[in-house]
Length: 403
Ligand code: PMT
Image: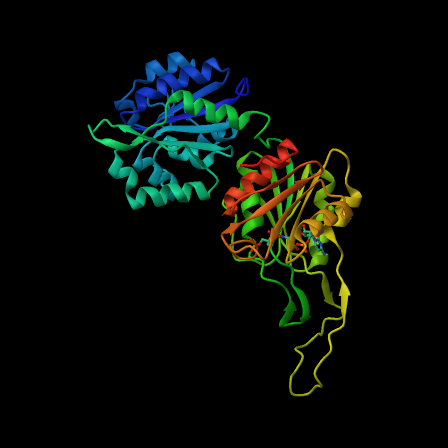
């Protein structure tokens, strides 16, 4: 039911697995989706547009314009029309072009114009699949927020046996249905995320800050965007960047600036995730010029409390909104996390402890415990990308699920 009325672009590349795309197309149409097939010139060598247009009840798009009438096929319009794009089979060549923006056919230009989630089902010989360049291209595509439907291991067209068989159409359908089922999608949700450290100026060259790299918050932004959310990311100074171009990134420096941006965006947000490591204190005064070592006594820097952004949003929160905080602790982890959940009026808190190796600041991994109002789940050490998936799943279902 979740695909009923969905606009799906089915991209077909030139590989022997293209014959399976016919079954996939039939399954998508049967599930109630409106499907537009876009095929590469090589794809037409494997499967005829007549079969595909008969099943989809739409002319198949392959070229930029129809030769005899000059009718222009707009990849931009197609990209905007789609609720999702599935490229099955995706060959090594098309995967390489997508990863590097080589827009030399209609399928690749449509991919580059697509604003919706994109699912890629590779199919190729085992050695091509295992080649470092194919693997690097797939990881690059994944880092842009695309969903890779890994191929199976089995008998291949080359006569060899190994990993490279395109996933079966029924399984691809299952992936899409799961994605669009109420449990996974963030379509039409507005999400505010904070990330990175804040810098509190002492003088023009010095600040009070912390070690946050922004990796956790940026992974959350990419995860929410890949599920269709409209994401605003308010970020302190970091060197990481988002993969998904639809994310609106607002750069700030201090806690006060972060608060001001959050207060603007929060009233119209459905979900807010406070992942930033906000400095709790700021210098009471910022010197106009560099504090000189030579001319002064050892300076004493008077500190004042910064605003608590999560608590401020907690006080403004409406019942329709979900507010998620983080807790970075060094001791009494569970008690402190629960205390913050309650004091800041949060719906969920994600605890990470500096006592766990591979967790917290700077690492590519994290180990978290999620607390909602009525559930608590401890997760093993995972990549920050996978931790982001667990957090977003818990936000959507309003409870965590141990895995
Ligand atoms: O950026 P990375 O290197 O990937 O590291 C990720 C992380 C460790 C920064 C992240 O996982 C994390 O734990 N973020 C919250 C860090 C923190 O400030 O925790 P806290 O326990 O001090 O704060 C509790 C909550 O209140 C947090 O949601 C925080 O964003 C918020 N807060 C804190 C202080 C303040 N003045 N305003 C706030 O909104």
